[in-house]
Amino acid sequence: MCHPVNLGQGASLQTAFEFALRDPLLAEVVTFDADGQHQLEDAVGMVAMLRRENLDVVIGSRFLDNRTTLTRAKRLVLRIAAQFTRFTTGMALTDAHNGLRAIDKGMLQKIHLNQNRMAHASELIDQFSEFKARWAEYPTHIVYTEYSRSKGQSLLNSINILVELLFR
Image (tube, rainbow, N blue to C red; front, top):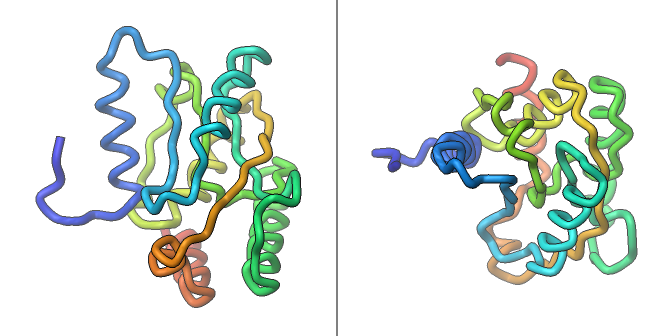
């Protein structure tokens, strides 16, 4: 499957979900950001937790331990986003915008992303809440490199995401 033009991360994930669901042997999927900031060990641990605890989704959190170094501004924005998510969904997440997630096939079959760009992260959490997903968070180590910082979200982009969500 290929998009003729760049439609954004949300559209790419939805296309990947549809493709993955064609595989009759699929048990779960792992999502991660393409900038290299996520660690394979965390993904493996998340899948193990998903299976062991019979969960629908495991969401990574850079706030469950102290391995990830963040600027004060980024920490504040992410904390506010988590509080907003708690208010709108009832899910008491510590890190609502972590791209590392393990999702069970049953939950994946219910998900349909409409937000093509970065607002898909909030939309996913909304859908997990709507479908009453059994969920947990898993401590993740986010490694910010020069490359990942160059691809990262500016604080202004956070406002763009909020606007996308409000007017969807």
